Image (cartoon, rainbow, N blue to C red; front, side, top):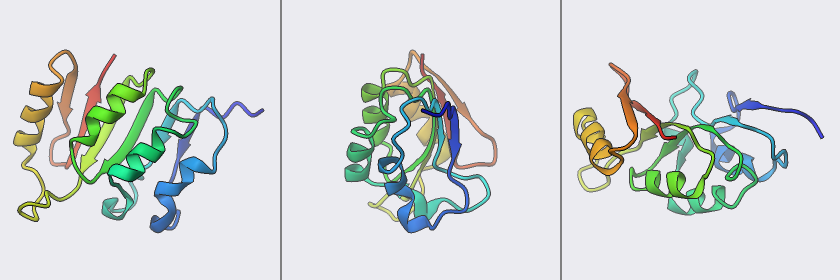
Amino acid sequence: MTNLYSLTIGEWNSSIVQEIPFYIKNKLIRQLDLQSSHYPSRDRCFNQQQCIEFLTSTFDSQCQVLSIVLDHRKHIFDLIEHMPNLCTLKVECELDQSNNDRPNMNELVQWMVSHFSPFFVEDISRSEIIRLWIR
């Protein structure tokens, strides 16, 4: 068994990014980056079904640091609740389907603070990404 600690998905075909966690069987990966800072990550967005499937992969129990793009902020709850060792969540939320617009960053930060008050939330200035320190 290899001692792979961190994995960043960079230049993969965006249509398969959501499937990659199911092909990797290493249970020791502690840091998983599914955002890739080098490319616009809108096409790497995880929907509800993909989040559920991700939570049944080998990463759910050991992952401590996760960078991911979600199609809706409500999936943050599932990730935090079902990933017992998750300490840091770097999340980008996709378009709000009701008005076809991105959530306002202040609104998103306020929403996260109100729902995750014991946690520390950092708004990354001039970015659509939020970091959430959990445990």
